Amino acid sequence: MREENIKQVDQIMTALTQVIDPELQVDVVNLGLIYGIDIEEEKATIKMTLTIMGCPLSDYLQNSIQKAVLQVDGINECEIQLVWYPVWSPERMSRAAKEQLGMQEEKKAESQNKDKIIDFNLPIKKMADKYPDFVQIMYDCGFTRIKIPGLLNTAGRVMTIPLGAQAMKIDLTKVKKAFEEKGYKVIND
Image (tube, rainbow, N blue to C red; front, top):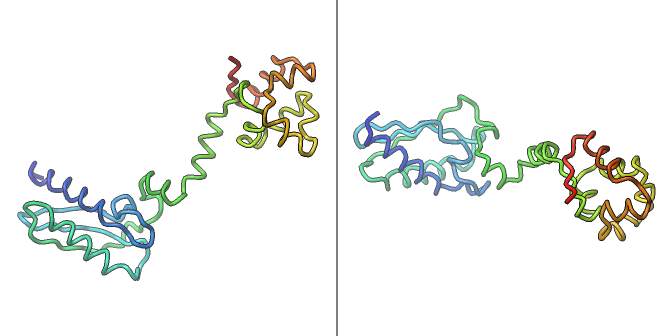
């Protein structure tokens, strides 16, 4: 592909980010609908797919794509080839599109588990809300009052682990070790 064509492909991809799927409110590039762009002289051929076969927005999207492509300098003709293989799936979407559509929850949960951090300076309630196993670890360390109904929602909003350990006469190194054994990084500044 000539350098001029490479620039045009880049310009076309940029133009296509302005073509928004009206149902999903995400552009066709980030949805992963564009499979390829070929340029021969002044003609661009766009290989694309749809999220579902028989999509009611097929004509709308194709017209919008043609309009966007024809705005690129040096392109006077645009052909769209609708392809069904490889089959479109949500994995083809960009991370930004998945986040916009709220599909990153699993990854967020995975990253939270990878970056499990217990900050001794934060209120106990905040960490209990973030980590499902926090309350049980604290209970196992001797913070038996943590399971008293309502205590976490009241005192837990201001109580830190060091303050609670002092009040309950629990060794902080024991608490730190318990969290580290469960894969947490402990911040105790």
